[in-house]
Length: 271
Ligand SMILES: Nc1ncnc2c1ncn2[C@@H]1O[C@H](COP(=O)(O)OP(=O)(O)O)[C@@H](O)[C@H]1O
Ligand SMILES: [Mg+2]
Image (cartoon, rainbow, N blue to C red; front, side):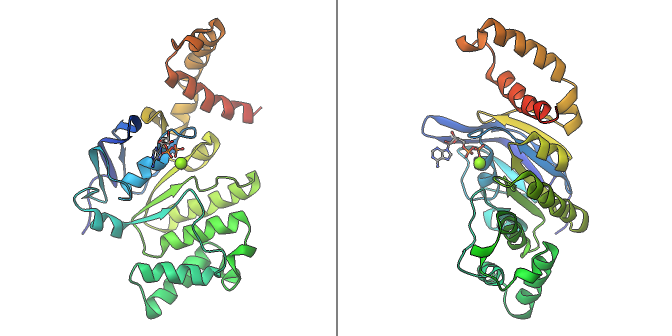
């Protein structure tokens, strides 16, 4: 089926864990072919959002369309269209790169020559063909991340979720991994939703970014829009509020503080 319209659209997507509202009435629309970033600090609700879109977690309220299908009512159809790289490493370190992909491909119902070909293509695409028969415990952190991305491509997804794809990698390896993510966008027909807490990463990769904190989207735009337009205003205002001690009394909206923290770390990083 050819899907017209957005790759992902959420409708007041919400997840509560007891009293905690982890994701709070999120409304975003991601166009086909876009790389969209969810940027926010730890605990902001990024992983929970991805898990709901990937049909791993059921929303408490609201819903979303992924690849034109409803994540609650049509979860099976959604799963056929997506690939996912989880925040935490999930490959088996005792298996080789090839074996890891083989097991995963089997889970997707792939077999025989098709599976073999897809594995070779994916490993080659991610620059791992020479390492295919080496146990993953001998891989570097960056190689493991690339193997996980290779694995997520096996079922030729239309939509790819990358949850903190460069978490814990050194800056050089991170930039190297970005090149592969850019190549996926360029050479494969996929929409990518990635999460990160580095503005630098969102800036380097994403067409558009949503800043999220305490489960709420607090700003959406292109990296340039988010970086520069409101920055001065927010920077100055929040600095003054901060100086006057308002934030300690809870008078400064938490969102402003988040925005300032995220943008600030980026600006500091460029000094
Ligand atoms: N299974 C769970 N049970 C209870 N609380 C959870 C669960 N998963 C996540 N949370 C809480 O939800 C909030 C959002 O978490 P998460 O989506 O993992 O944030 P992020 O990925 O942005 O770091 C956090 O406060 C986290 O502690
Ligand atoms: Mg997370």
